[in-house]
Amino acid sequence: MSRSTPELSRIAATGLACVTLAAVAWMDFATGEEVRILALYFMPLLVAGWYLGRLGTAVFTVLTTAVWVSVLYSIGIRLNGTQQWVISALATGVGFLTVALLVGFLRSALDQAHALARTDPLTGLPNRRELTGSVARELALCKRGGRAATLASIDLNDFKLVNDKLGHQRGDEVLWVFAGILNRSIRASDSAARIGGDEFVIFMPDTNADQAAQLIDRIRQATESTPAFHSSGVTLSVGTYSEDPAASELSAMLVEADALMYDAKRRGKGMRKPAPERAVGVPHDGHRVKATVLDDE
Image (tube, rainbow, N blue to C red; front, side, top):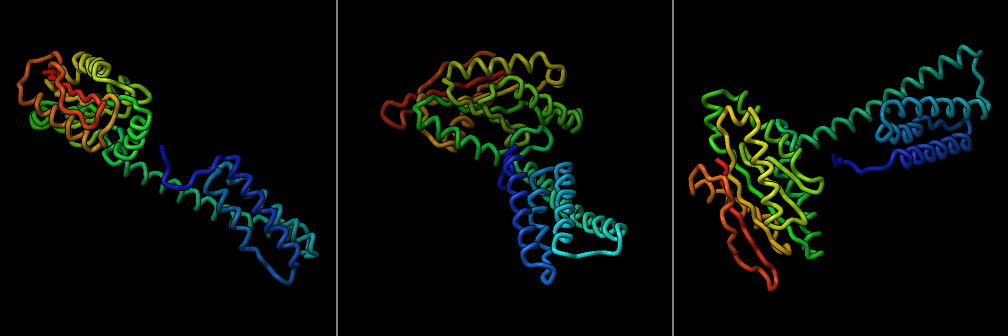
C-alpha cells in the first residue's frame, strides 16, 4: 500500500534518529546544567515513533533515556543515591515512551485512513480514485514506450436481482468472490478495481486485444465454475478497448470500454463468444485502435 506520508527505509530512519539524538546530547552537554533542554530529546523520539514500529520505538526510547542520564551525570549533576537516579530515569523514560508511541499510533491511523480512502472496503480492490492515480502513471509509460494497453469494463448482470431476492449478504458474497477471481486471474502488472456497485475495471499494460480476450475468457470460465455465480444466476457483460500503441488518456479509454460493455448488454443475453473486433478510430497516425464487445450470459 502506498502511504500518505513521506517514507524512509528503517535503516535510514534509525540513522536519522541516532544522528538527531547525538546532536541533542551534544547540545545538552555543551550548555551545561544552567540550561535544560530536555524537550529537545523528543525530536529523535518523534522520528523513531513515526518510522520504527513499536519494538523499534521501545528500544530507541531506552537508548534515549540512557543517553539523557549519561549527559546529566557527565555535566556534574548528582542525585541522592542510586534510587533517585533509577526513579528519575524511569519517570523520564515513561514520558519519552508515551509520546513516541502516540506518534506511532497517529502514523497508523493516518495510514489506515489513507488505505480506506483508496480501497473498496468490501472487496479489498482499489477504488476509482486509486485506479485513476496508479493506472494513469502506467498508461503514461505505455504511451512513452509505444506499447499496447487495454482497458476492460465489466458489469455483473442481474446483480440487483440477487440483492432483491436473495438478500444483500448474498450480493456481498458475489462481489467478494468476483474480486477474488480477478485477483487470481490478472497478472502482477495488471490493475483491477471496483468503480461502482457492480462495475469493475481491469487495466492491462503491454496487452493487445487478442491477449486481453484470453484473460477475459479465463475470468468468464472461472465465474461459470464458481458456486456463488452459478447458483445466483449472475453473469458478465464485458467491453474491452485496446490501443496498440497506446495514445488516449485513461478517461477516454474508460468511456470507450463502458460504451462497449453497454453494447454487450443491449445485444441480449446468451452469447458466450467475443463479437468480431471492429476499428473505432485512429486518434493519431500509426495508432491502431481496436475494441471488443463480449457477452457472457
